[in-house]
Structures are given as C-alpha cells and as structure tokens.
Length: 162
Image (cartoon, rainbow, N blue to C red; front, side, top):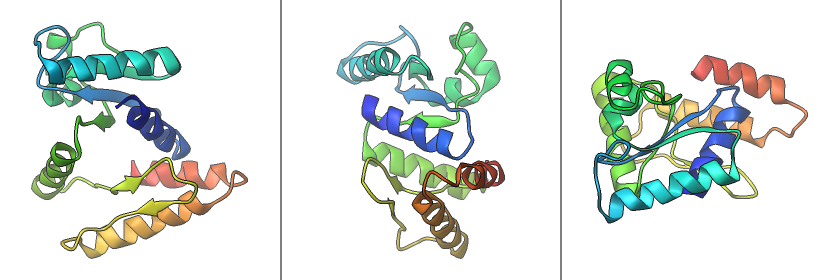
C-alpha cells in the first residue's frame, strides 16, 4: 500500500496536481480495529516515514476523505480529510468497483487504470469503456511517454484533467 501511495503521488505530481493521499479503510483514525485497518495504518506510517514530503491520512473512510464536513468532524487536524485527491484502496476489487461506480453515477472524470512502477507507460481500458475513456487514456499514455524535458506540458495537461 505504501508503494502504491508513493507511486500514485508521483503520478499526481507529474501532472501538476499536489497530492493529498487518503489511505482508505472502513475506519477513520482510531475508530476501528482489525487486520484490514491495521494494514492501512501500517501502510500510512511507512509512507510518512519514507515520504515526509507527502500529505497522507489513514486509515480514513471514503466519506471523511472527500467530504469537507465529514472530514472536519472525524479528523479535524488532518491536512487531507475532506480534501483528498489521491485515493488508495486496500485491494484491486474494491478500488476497481468503487471508481467505476463513482464514474458512472456522478459523471466524474476517471482516468485509468494506470499501471505504475514500470519502465515504460502502460495503461488499461475495460471492454465497457467509452470513447472519452479511450481518448483520455491515449492522452495520458502519450504524456507519460514524454521525457523529462517536457514537465510544462505535463503540468498544463494535468490542470486540464483536474
């Protein structure tokens, strides 16, 4: 989870978006216990140790991560609660189902899945993708293919996508 959070933050930064990472769980802060919560708690601590430059909160429930009112109620001292823009799920099943549900029900722009940590950019499209999904994935992959000489282009595209 810590590596996924770090890679996702780097992807966010490369597109000019300041990452606020939510390590998602069914618990916020110290409200719950169990193996799944502990996994998220440990992953969050690893990110904080290895990447003190990042804003990260976890464990945190989805509502507390994205809703400012709920975020202030549950974690009032958090820099991330209610303002998260990078969501880290504990497993592929939950992440995929949730991002698809949010995309379909709200019309939110969803880019990805983006495979990270590889030497070359690799991204994925589902069989049920839309023309917009294809277009956005092609654009993202092309941008990821740019060398380090083009950070301004990445930043400007990130603003458009954000």
